[in-house]
Amino acid sequence: MTGWQTLLYKEVLRFWKVGFQTVAAPVLTAMLYLLIFGHVLEDHVKVYGTVSYTAFLVPGLVMMSVLQNAFANSSSSLVQSKIMGSLVFVLLTPLSHWSWFVAYVGSSIVRGLAVGAGVLAVTSLFVLTVPAAPLWVLLFAVLGAGMLGALGLIAGLWAEKFDQMAAFQNFVIMPMTFLSGVFYSIHSLPAFWQGLSHLNPFFYMIDGFRYGFFGVSDVSPWLSLAIVGAAFLVVSAVAVHLLRIGYKIRG
Image (cartoon, rainbow, N blue to C red; front, top):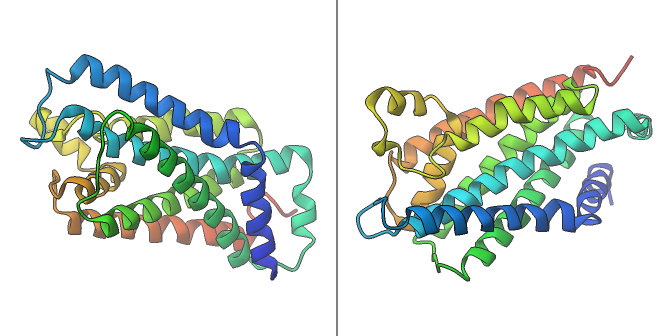
């Protein structure tokens, strides 16, 4: 294998070796969300006409799991390597900043898609949701996981200890995912909060992903694709630049 392939393999193996924690646990969490919210709100919330609320929840939970786990993968790997001192062994290799980027973001995409597939498989036991446009589903899943993997890379480079990374996740990632329409359609919100939701790039990831399942969405899937694609390019450019200058990893 070449350098970047070896690093990618190492990063995938890192989370796969503790799959019960990194894959099974998020799947269980998503299933609990589905059971609780679906049971309580099924008869009280109507979305997209004929789509039941429980079915509406599934794509949102899948995408939320993809995004959160893609971020956690790259950020936790870098911070852990810094604290344990093992990052120096990667720094000693002649790998370019692009190799680092592809390996860390690529492994984040693999973990995000693995968790998302697990959530979709488990939730299908309760409500069968067949994608109306599978290519849209795959496109938004990969772009969303890639963007959050790159964002996790930035957070991992910036953070020097686990509390800083946890603060980034708790005060940035979690609020943006929960306020992106996972549990509701933004059309049910007052005008002010609808406008605020349109400033959240996570909303477009989940709305576009949901379009792939039902063929309907709150905004045009092409608009969502443009915004998500642009956000991915911007975040990736920042991550590559920080890797190139060795931000907080080279003396």
